[in-house]
Length: 279
Image (cartoon, rainbow, N blue to C red; front, side):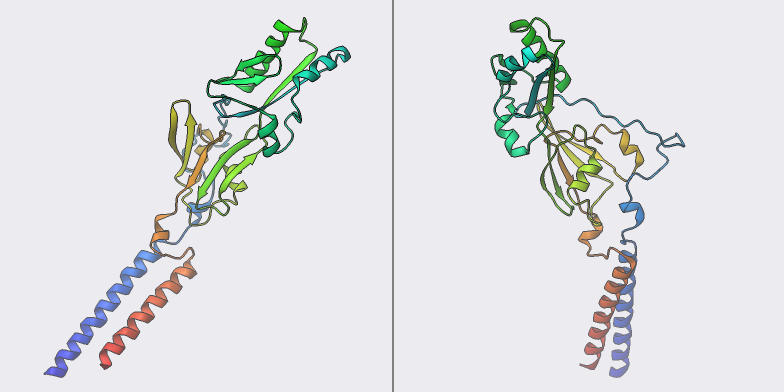
């Protein structure tokens, strides 16, 4: 009788092990990372146009406090060249240099939205685009020193597009790109791209506004992301890539890894069963 009860107990234990293995198998088999999780800009039926020709949205950036501007003034008139030299700060270049040199030679927007420009004193640039600032500088020069601004060329650029990338990426940190426009895929690629365990369907973009920061979301697996106002990044953006939920489960990234995990679990459970049976 005692032996029969032991057999029943052992059979029940084996059934429990099999059930556990099946549950784990079901859980892990649905946790493999598929192409739909990692491929950018897929056609998910959100775009009606079959040609998929999408006009990406890129609104002009408006200067904020603590931005650094690179301003260059040049002229084709030889008589004006000597005069314009006094407007150029030391080591100031037109869009050149690196982030460190521009930090010292560029024009930093103060808390009141002004920049200290040689001879012109303070120029308010807060909330203006770079094109609008160029016009403001030209007008100020015309008003105070020059009779004709048609022979001068003013170039205003941001001293690098600085942003932060963190989370499930190969190389996070603070990045600076010397380009006028950078989309979020380019920004991520500059950070080593998203790891396979990163959630491309819900990228967080923390953006700075005059009244504070706001959190936005964008799905980079959908081609409709190109129409998002957050597809093109802005200075001081923070791009946060969250991990996929399946990463917390310890599931494999591929079918082979998942099978290996299941086989290991099954081996441990069976070994435990036979050890317990022989006691």
